[in-house]
Amino acid sequence: MVTAHRLPTDDPILPVTRLEPGLEAPVGVDALRQLPNLAIAQSGSLGGVAQVRLRGSEANHALVVIDGIEVNDPANGSEYNFAHLMPFASTAIEFLPGAQSAVWGSDALAGVIHLATAPNQANRAVGLEGGAFGGRTARLQLADRLESGYYNLAALTTESDGVNIARHGPEKDGYEQVGWQASGGWLGDRWQVRSLLRGANTKSEYDPGAFPTYLPADGDNVAEREEVLAGVDVGWDAHRWQHQFKLNHLRTENGDFAESQSTLATEGKRTKVSYTAGYRLASNLQAQGFVEHEVESFKQRAAATLFGDPNHSQRVDALSAGLELIGQIGKGLAWSASLRQDDNSDFGNATTHRLALRYRTGLGDLWLNVGEGIKNPSFIERFGFTPDTFFGNPNLEPETNKHLSIGARGVLGPTTWALTLFRDRLQNEINGFHFDPAIGGFTAVNRDGKSKRQGAEVTAEVQLGNTRLAAGWGYLDAEEDGGGREIRRPSHSGHLSATHQRGRWLLHGAAYLVGSRDDLSFASWPATRVRLGDYQLLRLSAAFQLTDRLEVSGRLENGLDDDYEDVLGYQTPGRAAYFGVRLSF
Image 1 (cartoon, rainbow, N blue to C red):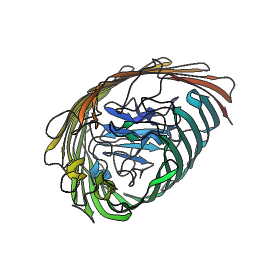
Image 2: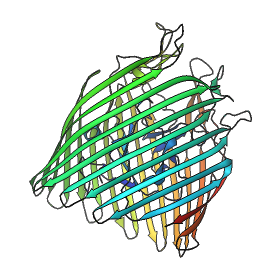
Image 3: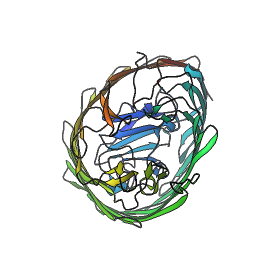
Image 4: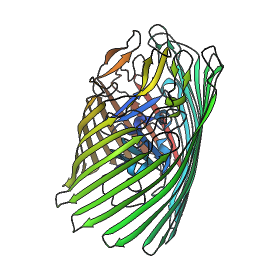
């Protein structure tokens, strides 16, 4: 586990939630729905832009990493589009909420979502699935854990005819993805080498927002995306020293088309190199220091108009260094103190910190997290350009978040439970929809006040024989600068699930509750608030082992056929059934 600290540990100071992908869809954001206070907003059906907001934060305030490599897209507001998530290619999803910039840097303002690919056991299989809305998927995985290492090879192709995401009209909005992954590692007594190569090509059909309501209306619009991710991680131990060298690269290409004509093309790149050293100062004290250099670049191409030329290329460099001390006092108290300095080439530098405490008792753990998170302004916010609509602001400064959370977790008989209280104060928040009369359009500005977020989370899991029950509930009070409820954040959310395994059967059922929340309607100026009602999602799935190698499965999505919108005007799929077969070898 490497989410909570720079170097791997199986006993992090702060609690890390670990999910294992199960019988959910092989593509998409649904694998994250059981995380408390995580608001999902997807613009329509499969393939529509899917944003995740942690504890009331903005969509680009969560850092997403795969095997320690950041995948937030520099060409997409520095956020990750969860519509293209491939959970089946990952063996675990680790979630670390709260301000984590002192360890992870910019983008980790509200937390880290980490997808790990190292397998714990053999998984060599090919699977086929088909069902509602013309959905069809084929996937292949060759993975195993060996005595001296591991490998995980995965490939997927999926297509869906989709549904009409607009409220009216017959046109369906489909989706296609081809994804692949090759990861592996050699784990010796003193040396460890890990590598990852991953790519995806996607095509999403969508409807444009039409004047005067600016709600989706049938149209022949397509978004295409290509992503390539590569990284290598070399670590070695020398007596009291630990060393880690990492090099990784991300490249994305995004294209928008209307009536088969290109309207916008963007390219984002990120290259990062880092070195981390850990030294055991004493039996109860370790120091971890690091230095890293990151280069991000952005290109935008589109037709010039009377309003201006949107074609430009940008680059940002950052040199960062940090130190973390991890210690133990007696048998019960563990602590860590982190400090990081980011030297940015184009905007203000930043210093972040984190103090984490954990006290272990006979009944469970008590923990505290006090820290600061930052989010650098994105290329879109600084240099984005949409004729007669949006003009970037190159003078933006990073956003900062003051974070405090306390919690308890423990085991009571067969039950594992956790309770968390949190409080965040966001300063210098970037408002990307500020109307500036001087330029006659919208731009991005840093707000003067604070956005306030606080809330509570409760989770519990119990194992009763062959049945595992899990439940979670989250409460959120998110207030924007100047008052008013933050949009697309429900005050209440929760889940209840049951998994039962007996003989050749594996059964799973889950219910998700998403409370009411606000959104904005741009049919008038200024925009007016619209209430989106609460909804419930029921998911049922089953798998049966016909033979030692052949498995059949089925799943039912939105079993209650609830009619809901995550984003104003974007229709979501109704009840859907899928059936699959899986052959192991």
